[in-house]
Length: 317
Ligand code: FO1
Image (tube, rainbow, N blue to C red; front, side, top):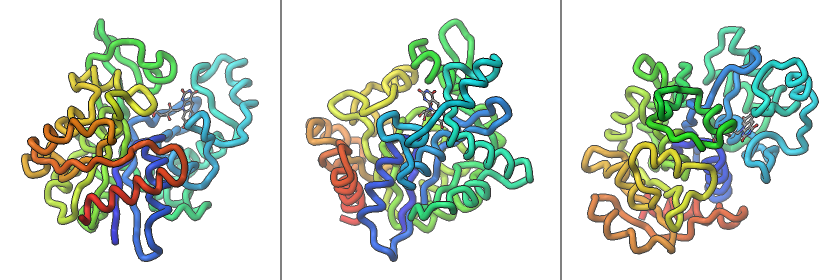
């Protein structure tokens, strides 16, 4: 079976790890990964969502922090701060810098991000192919009240999303194209899964890339989404601040309706919600999306695997 997953960082990484545990060797999983969080910092190209997924699938991630490498040190970052360069609120671990140096070097050799990602991830046997949604630099900027704007990462890590956002902009998206393999992975998939990632700043920037929504609309496979909201609150991160900014309630049904039913011009055929949100099912069904009530919390490997199994079951019936 061919499975294609649209994914952001931490939540998507955990979901992919669970999904990998339940597929058979004949199955192929491709993750189309958000690059809107990416940025240049002290001369290095940082790709947080690609790295979160890579480290998590490699078993090298810092499970507590949710990003970066396990067993990390921050000696170089302390030097950067001492020299007053970079962002003091954005810590680059020493091992992590190894990844950024490698990516920056390969980009400098003229390789597109998708080929760089293939090269870097081949160091580990991830069991999942990672493709950036686009090889173009399409960064998410946040327009805040008062009209100022800043890179998403500053809004997220420096201000912890505490400054009210008016809207989000994928800078340069109109001229961007899907990375090689993205449209093919959508067209060839038996199952397409929208991971429980931030609908606004992780999944949204993927869907905004010209061609991707059309590919999903025409895809012969089944499109299943996993709610990133449980009992009216976000599982982690600050997706509620993002949803509020675009006028979407932080609720399992509201996010499903935001994505919309594929039969009505949206992207979903089915939507997984937690048992605590079972009351949302009728509204989701009324919107033309099949609702599946399953445990959504990914506490550990077993619950993550169960969620992967439930997502596939929702697709193939
Ligand atoms: N998140 C933070 O809250 N503080 C940091 O200092 C930080 C550093 C960092 C470095 C590399 C990287 O790949 C991710 C990093 N993150 C940090 C997490 C990052 O903001 C998030 O992973 C996503 O971009 C938002 O989902």
